[in-house]
Image 1 (cartoon, one colour):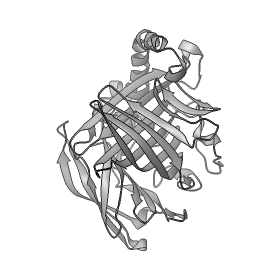
Image 2 (tube, one colour):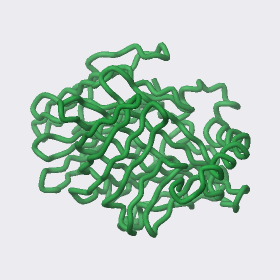
Image 3 (spheres, helix red, strand yellow):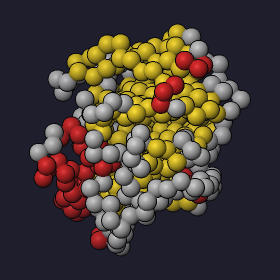
Length: 373
């Protein structure tokens, strides 16, 4: 982590390794784009298709997820990510959204040491207000100290962007990320136990094919700290959501993108809802958790997801940003409205992600992600 290394060394590593990182990132994330006449916007989906699965571990039913071990690395699988989102407010009631994500993707099942390391790290830091989306992306390779994951104490980092604790437990923790025009430094505290998505953490992604990931969420995290926006420091607090997921092939070739919601209600409950879109229609899954921490798995035929309106984003594409979500077995009917409709993130693989407000039969807030548009 940057806090335990000289800044000059980190800068030298960044300069020396940049060309190699770019080449490996192209191979890892866009190999199929370069050789298949596939639109660049499908980069996120292409990463998860994992054209070459040989040598990586398979995701199978029966794996027992353990804590805190499974917050850590799973290098036998092709990709994984640590995903933090947060809905925050300042003392005047102004709303903010924070996203902090670290992705790991393997070019080869042979790990390699030092500069021969075959694992690529990519990180996103995003701060959203009602008027502006501040965003930044970084790349690094494993094995040279610029990015990685440690278990004692727990830490996930790329340069000075880090989720770190002072013990083997991931909580309580500090979350840091950003650039010159925005930066966040937040304390995180777990307030509900983890939720195992799917069948005890085995998360099926396709109706008929054996395509899956291991997936758990932390549906209730308290956050407090400061945002630095264009040189102004703002004290904030609010609620966060964390996803941990790892796989070798998490999507099928016929699947084109997904719409994902992680919502926290004012009554203390929460909802995760996803649809993966394909030529044969959407495959949906999710979970609903009570304020007491009791979770029910949601089947595809229980979930209704309908876009209410579309927004033309900076890329010129239209993205569904207002949604109606229903669970007929729970008398739940809600609408989500984005804090900032223009939360298009033009990263190496572009997507829409940002904070949303919830109204209807329940009130609350959360995050939405949309890819493949």
